[in-house]
Amino acid sequence: MPTRNPEEIRQSIVVARQELAGSVEELRVRINVLTDWRRQINEHRGVAIAAAAVVGFAVGRRIFRRRGD
Image (cartoon, rainbow, N blue to C red; front, side, top):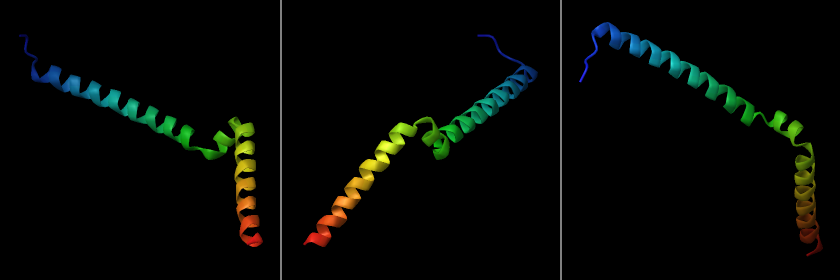
């Protein structure tokens, strides 16, 4: 089994740190994109409007029922 000298190990650690930093940054960007609600609404405007209509209808119906009792 080949062994690595201390300099090779240090270099391997440096490379691993750089790769990890890049992966963390990429993940941060992806999370920001996925959790940006304004962007999500703009990209899925039709679904957002339909969902708002359904929620509005359900809330209105519930309020109407309570007042009717």
